Length: 61
Image 1 (cartoon, helix red, strand yellow):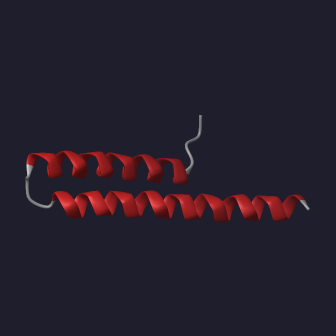
Image 2 (cartoon, rainbow, N blue to C red):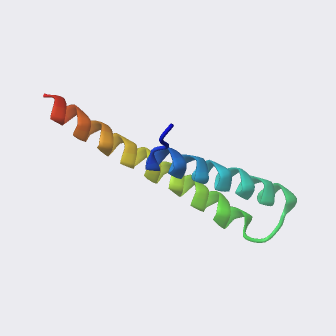
Image 3 (cartoon, helix red, strand yellow):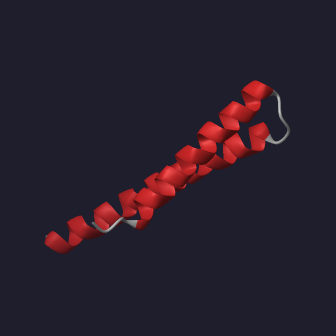
């Protein structure tokens, strides 16, 4: 099974998101930065997957 780049990017973002949330709960330093960074990576992977979907759709037409 071949993993797509956007899937790996999404899971990396989710990992950072959860770790940042746990840091925030424990009041450890840099929790909010990790949390926001993970959320930004999730958004970027979503944008990339939409762009890829639109390119595939235009090729079929």
